[in-house]
Amino acid sequence: MNAINMNWLASAEGESLIHHFYVNSSKKRRFYGILEKPSLPSSIEEVTYKIFMIGRSGVGKTSVIARLAGILDSNSYTETNGIRKTNIYWPVKIWDKVVLFKLQFWDTSENSIKKYNHILPVCKDKVDAVCSVFSFDDAASFNDIPYLMNTMINIKGKPANVVIGTKFKPWSSSMIDEAQIKEFEDKWKVKVIKIDASKLSVRSEIFDCSYQLNVICNILWNRDKEFISKLMGQV
Image 1: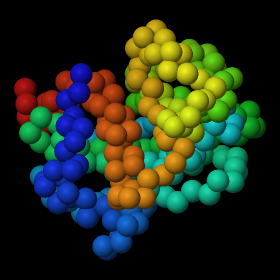
Image 2: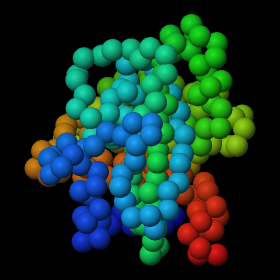
Image 3: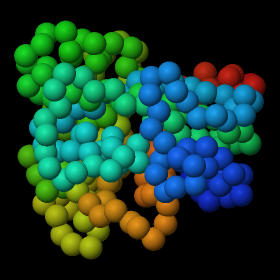
């Protein structure tokens, strides 16, 4: 069920809010620190979600977050040391009201989890969604996803499942075909969100990730729709 208007960002109302997310009139999206947030009208409700990123080393968990945050990311691989927390603010239109989602992405590495006993419990504590990441260039990383999801199944609060596939190449074949993706989606009742290997340059970068962010917000809304409905005064 899509309560979120997936094309709202391209509307006059959506475009009127977009400039709040950019540095002056540049094409560079504003990065928000722990105590910062977009200067939007106070009438816009805000909801906060904690998202824990899991997946094999090297599949692109950190790059996914950078892409969604509008941060230029190098192609060189550097393992995440400890925990990296990134806040991404994203406005959506639900029914007739704008809601600001504050998505808190928690990123770590397998080595950090093995080295420091506190990291995994901290990442799992009060988490709202677990985001499993695989690469379309690595079949083994895709085959790992069911196991990874099962390891998180007993987390208190029943977090939502988000699955992202990186290095997707719509113009050529990959190690994971559409039939495998469809079979996985049908079995696990979860939508695989694809991150294109290329980065479009003909339009604002925010449109390169708008679909992916909207889907993530919609998954979270479906998990907590009763709470958000009450927040919005719909029931």
